[in-house]
Length: 474
Image 1 (cartoon, rainbow, N blue to C red):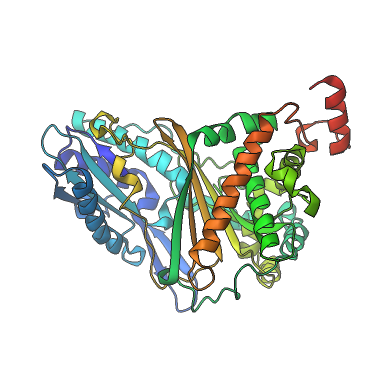
Image 2 (cartoon, rainbow, N blue to C red):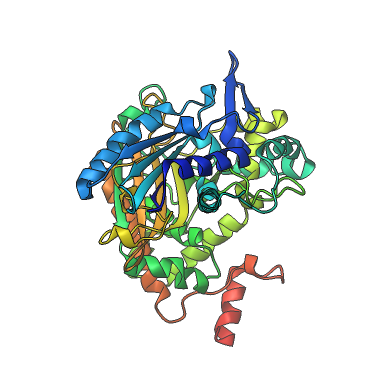
């Protein structure tokens, strides 16, 4: 995360603020140890054990602007990445790009994924602002009531994994992973050949005039979430892409990432707890489009509405938003082997939500601690080159606010040996084309409506609901 550091910042105030965060958020003092097998032990060291002065580095950027600043920041990011070593107790690094007295600088925070996720950033950054103001005023920072610790949550998950309510989900997941899923690439994924250093990336951006309705009016019309809409478009895109490549299968088996903060542990409050809470679970999405309906799809016809409702209900049918899958797959000894023996999805999909973007034209006008304009280029998260790739495609998308409104930014990653860039760009363009068709449909007459999961009155089919809504003019 790269943010705009206050013009009033000094090395002392930033060090004090970071020390406050290290002492307040336990997981930032994480230390890992690994046995000869695959088991890891996670230890939280006491307050004061990690010194902010050891993780904060100052870089003088006085008089450096534009592309020169971006180049410098990208170069200085690498040492921060390399310094992350959980086995040595290093899970957070910071670099202050000091633009000089009275000038807005930049602060890079580089955290290991073991201790951070998308929601955690939304907790950490306001806390940093609070800690900094307290440091300037020479007082203690007040973060309010503490919630459930990461340690207590982890232990609670182990107990929840063996509950009767959770084990009854096993049939849901075994059925899901047995769905037809034709090979996407020229060969199956090879974990020894397909590693991070053999991957390739592509970033594409959907214009604001299409993104905005996908985040607002389209979900509202269908009483759905943004993820329901984006995944409908994605399921349509993969089905069309496969059809044009003469590959069978109308549905798509996808690993979905969720925020992982569902109510899985009774009495837990992790609304202000840092950590990697991300859940991952498979789902088979079938928009139900047959061969003679594709012309209607691209015209934004009624079949689009049927597809949205079908995918929405498929997602709603998952217990606890799918978070229970990971418990049964990894924490329940009676079910883990069964799920481990089944095929895994070839695609990972993660919608990260909505983020601000720093002002490009006049960076000095952006608010303190807001994302810096350099945050979306030249500075990346990085990963170990030897890390094994788990998917043929990884799609991570986010809605990024800009001067014209939010734009959907989609990042695609894949093994270079499996696909040429043109093949991936074709799929990426087809997804955006499907999303445009959804917007076209939603803006037409009679679009939208309820689905069975919206209603307290059970037993109604989708056709019956549609008939009632037509009769009542809803």
